[in-house]
Length: 382
Image (cartoon, rainbow, N blue to C red; front, side, top):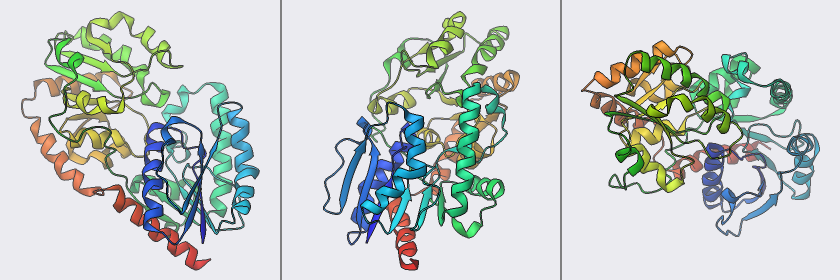
């Protein structure tokens, strides 16, 4: 039996982390099945382990990305399935071929497909509105022919059912684990910039790339309110915006007037993430939409309090282990930041976080086992 692993569009940080870990373990779990993996030719997927039942094919997607995606969906993936004589296609990146002659399993990671007509869409440029509207149409067509979906949370399962009328028996929930990037040792080195650069009791880490849905645009209003309340002597933000990024330059320019309470660390390397989390007073995440939120789990594991948006995805991920605010209201945000600064008993959130972590798998081995069960079941029905 052969399975085509369609990871050709798995390029985001969180998505690629999930895909790589699944790919490294799934062939071990199912040695009797041969896996043909198609993925983008990017650094994140180099040095995959060599296995006799895993063939890896790299595709360049830097040029004409949108056109290539359309060709993939309409034609190429189906033809590759025939070429490799696949008995099943497992799409690891949300939007796969519209219709196949073999069973189709889809791992849905992208939240935009199920969070429709939400406030974050107002931040899109006109071309993005067209692009995502068309992507949703393609997803709807694909969903009618997909045999099984996997999602990472009950929230995503509920929305997938409501938006596309997909029967619940076609949706399986398989949560991911904490994406440990770097040392697991709690004695990992501190981030000296966070520790030494400012003498303020409340150091907030906004650990995210500057995508529109991450809600960086609320920061200038938050900074103004902080200064108005004279909290800038207590609160300091640390951003992780890459240098010369498409959204980042505009974001940083808008924040220049508030440099006394804000520092950009730049993009962190994977082994620098634990130290940054451990050195911060809290993780600050005003995001408007997420499908899972791996960073929440990292913060919980490193016993870093969480201050985040009051949304269904964050409520499910964090439970009682976080402080919540309205991400569109700077007063709500600053009220809760002020509450955190004055709360000497925030260890209660850490205790709740340690309990919440018990809801998630212990290892990628456990996750891959669940996927292997789904694959075997689908192949046996073929």
